[in-house]
Length: 239
Image (tube, rainbow, N blue to C red; front, side, top):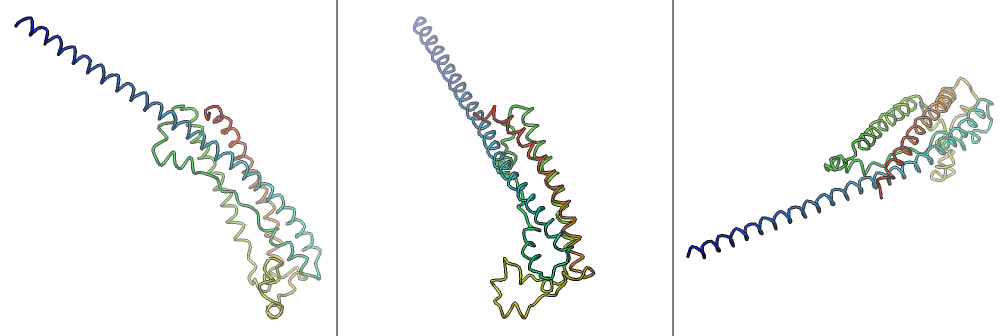
């Protein structure tokens, strides 16, 4: 009986040991799988950031080109305005491209997802994580300056009376009025009078606009350079 009890006891101990070993192995495998999953999530986050930056760089390039075109047309508009035109249509044909340009809007889907879903903790490279966070903080600051400059410029764009200015005669919109309504809404010849409020406001607005556009280009070039630098850092991890 003693021998049987001893055998059963050893057998039970062996079974327990096997079960414990099995549990430890399962836990280790689960831990490996979890670490592999987190590592894949980290790589995915880097790749999505990389994609957003690629889109941003392209959009900044397009915006810079648009701003340069706007400046060129604005200078032509100012020259024609200050030379005093008998035919206002010479000015109106350039008005829209002289005051409008593409607006850069950053692609922030990846960083918003990372920061709002707790995935930020998955970024194990502290140096790279700091670089990412600092980039978006600085980007927001520079874009806020651009927005503030645009708002100040808009405050100077006081034409008082859009009908007198000739909105209905702008090439982009005149087709919706028809000849009879355009005649009834005929604008004034403000372009012949340097003391006219519309003349003065346009001159000041377009003059300041040239500077605001140049400042925006400088700020966008700074964002573009930072985007390129961060993209290069991410390239090594996004594989």
